Image 1 (cartoon, rainbow, N blue to C red):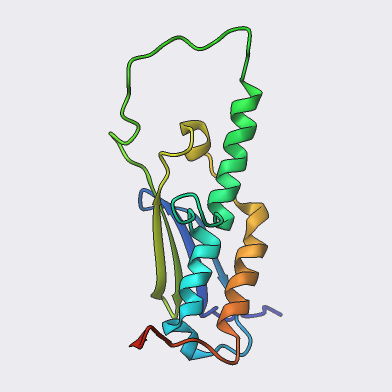
Image 2 (image 1 turned 90 degrees about the vertical axis):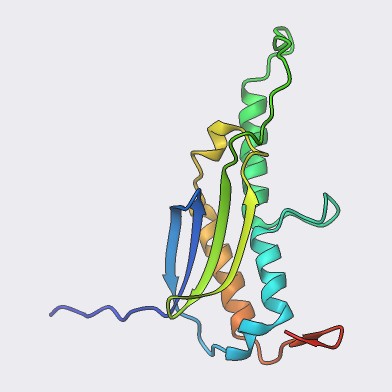
Length: 159
């Protein structure tokens, strides 16, 4: 007997330069439509994909992961007895690589965020592996989308 897999309404997609790194479908029990236009959705995107407020706020789940992988990589190849050669100034943002993250409901984008990948070494930037983060990301999304109440206005502006 072949079991038909029902199509999931919800998904997240993570890109680098418009190329998919990771895409996952999932379901949300007790989905609340109000969540789409809420302050909590913006906070969710910051929690998953935010770079912090000029270094003041906390980094999101994905940038924090990339930062940790960068630190591991840089320490692995650090040699205090062989300092790097002095190189002329190089503009790191000459060719910019961008990461994008989208949350979709019924194939419609309801939340989207972008940041530059040029803050991370190329060896980390082009070999992203977020398998260990997928559960955390989906859990955060499900938590926000299934709440009972939301903040739908901010500073007397309807979101």
